[in-house]
Image (cartoon, rainbow, N blue to C red):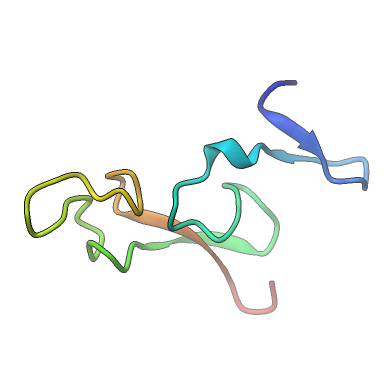
Length: 68
């Protein structure tokens, strides 16, 4: 299971290597969800036309949600 790690509760969570610099948690982590990247406003590119390194060009980041 190279893509997963144990959370200590018997459940597995996605590996942190799948995270982009702007993510607060790995994709699929409990209490998180997709949000619009604040650096590119969801466009995936910066004003200069370059791919946004914060979201890796996806326009989305993983953030904690209320209560998470």
